[in-house]
Length: 117
Picture 1 (cartoon, rainbow, N blue to C red):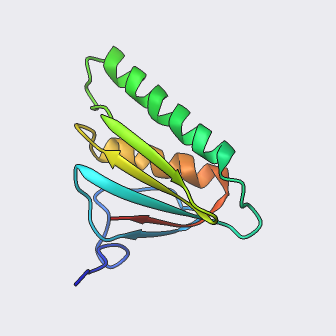
Picture 2 (cartoon, rainbow, N blue to C red):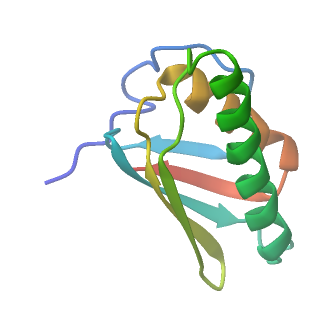
């Protein structure tokens, strides 16, 4: 049995209004994030590249700051016909990464829904 945690329970951080529906069922070290694309934006190759670049940049910046904000240890992106599935080892990152990542995704305006489980 799964229980949806958000939007029923408030997130532990504030975000600007997101351009997609956000559903959080769980958040663990090994996290799956499913990104459902808008119907008119079914090109996930450029989004996949942008996500990889974002995570790499985040890790580099964190390492320069003595890994103050943690790093993503591993990530695998699976391309599906209408979505991307990210398998992430959240390692030592916390809510700071999640807040920045959701904000980054929102700015793309390519997503209909983001589910974190």
